[in-house]
Structures are given as C-alpha cells and as structure tokens.
Image (cartoon, rainbow, N blue to C red; front, side, top):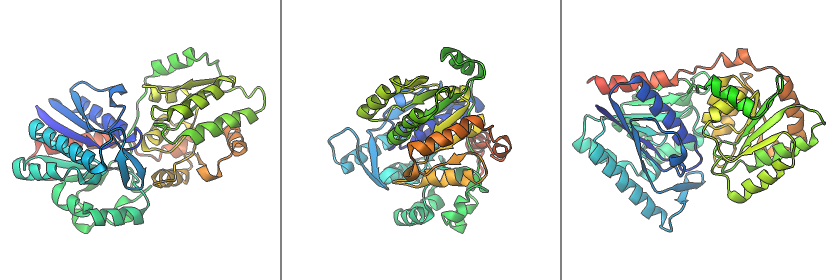
Length: 397
C-alpha cells in the first residue's frame, strides 16, 4: 500500500483543511491501495467528515495576526516554542509513517519554515519520496509574494525539493507563473489544474428545502462567510439590509456563521436573526455544499472553496471579499467578476442600503450559465493523475 502524507498548516479559517480533505477524498476514491496521513493545525478537524483510509495528526494551533505574522492560538508558549513543537511532530510523522509522497499546501517550507527538518530527513533517509506543492489560484499581491518567496528561499525550495507544483486555477484567469515570477528552471514542474469541482447530493438538497419549508417558486438565499472568523460585517450588513426590504419580498434566508466566529459576535447575530421573518441561523453545517445546492442565490465572501462551490453549483451570487491582511480574495473575486460570474462589492463600500438594492437584483436575475461554462473544474482528476504517476512510476516528473 502506498503512503501519502499531507501537510495543511491551517492558521486562519477552514479553507486550507477543507480543500486538502477534498483532494484526499478524491485520491482515495481514484487510487487503489492508498493510505493518507494528514498533518493539520486546524482547530475544527474533529468536526469535519473524514474519508476512510485517512487519519490525522493535530498540530498545536497557530493563528494569523497579520500578513505573515503568527502567534500561538491557545497555548501560553512563545511562537518559537510552538513552531519547534509542531516541527518535531511533523518530523516524527515523516520518520514513522515513511511516506511515498509528501503533499504540501501553499507554503513550500511550511509556516515559519517548520518543514525544514522533515525535508532534511527525507533527503537523507527517504530520497525516493516524491514531493508535490499545492498552490491556490491566487496567493496575494505579486509584489508581496515575490518579496516573501525570495526572502524565505521558497523559489530555491521548489527548485531543489519538489517534483511538481500544482496550481488550483486557470492561467487565463490568473497567471501565477508570470505574476509571481517563477524562475525559468522550475516552470516545467508547474501545472495549472483548474478549480476544484464540488459535488452535491440532489436528494439531500431537496430534503433541506423541505425541512426549511421552502414553498414552490420561493427563493432561498444562503449567507456564508466561510469559517466566520472575520465574517461579522457581511452577516451584520445583510441582516440590516433585510430590514430595508419591502414587505412581501418573498425569499427565505439561511445564515451560516461558521465555527470560527467569536462567540459574542455569533450571539449578537443570532438574536438579530430571531427577530427577522424568514431567517434561519446556523452556527455550522457539515452539509454546506448541499445547502448551497438547495439555495437559489448566495451572499458570501470569496475564499477559494466558497467560490468553487458557487461555480460548481452555478449559483447566482453576491460576493464581498476579504481585503486585509491579504488581498487574495479581492484579486480572485475581481478576476472572476470580469467574466460575468457574479457581482462583487468591496467591503469598505458595503452599506445596508447598497446591499438591499443588490439583493433585490440578485433574487430577480437568472444565473450566469454562459459565464460559468468558462471555468475549468477538473482539478481533482488532474491531481489524481499526477499523484498516481509519481507513486507508480520511477520517472521524475
């Protein structure tokens, strides 16, 4: 049986671990005799649905407090102490699991270079282990990424340590090779795989509408800020916009705050939701894809997974991206809005009156079917093909 070790650092939100779990799930469905060990810093990994033949090691949590700045989330230890502990756990996992392939999410050397001891061990003791770097379509502004990668030796790491780099996006939408100044020596290792397609269960989607008592012809709007850690503004403004809607607007709303929203903010929003007709408030759901499938329209932020879900379900959407401390969401949303996929509102310009107007337009307009057909959703089979080739071929990619 082949062994795959997956590193997902998870210092903010749910996006990284949900994306890597989607990849793991597809790999286990596509490749026989595969065992996966996930190493993650996610605080909510225990609440997510995990596929068979996958287990995980939970690293002590870090949290992002600024662009490239971190602190311990729960422990009283210093950042240096927590990173050392995480690094030791990762090294122990590599030594004992002895992976045939290491898959790293986003950061070539890990958070604060915590993967370096593991890479040194692999080079010395397990030189046959293949390595894949997974990158989102957009990371941040090019000047920020290029400076950071040059300063931290990430280009050199890709050149000397990795066999392949897989970008989960389309070059026509955002050319990461060009924008992030990939050196000529590594370009042959890089592939654009398209976006991750999210699948829903039609029966579950119908059951959700029945459970929410959605009438025939009535529209359901899903409001989701992803993990929710910085989603208060979106939900708060949406609820204020509902107060401005004319009586008899007719649509229903499901708000999912996300498990990482601060408790005091969540309770404020819950109490407000209870005073509004036609609003259901959820802390978290393990069926977000099915809930989105059951919905007619979406109001959301612009994290990678949420956008993939919107595109996969071909939903009409109003997107309010995060713009700080990184501009990843704004860049993604702006690039896709130019294709006519959805309407984007800058959060600094967001007001209840503006959102009420856009919400009326949203529920009345048809989905952008033609625009959505421009999006390549073949990332999962592309990743599976690359992983299978590296695992079962002695040729270097």
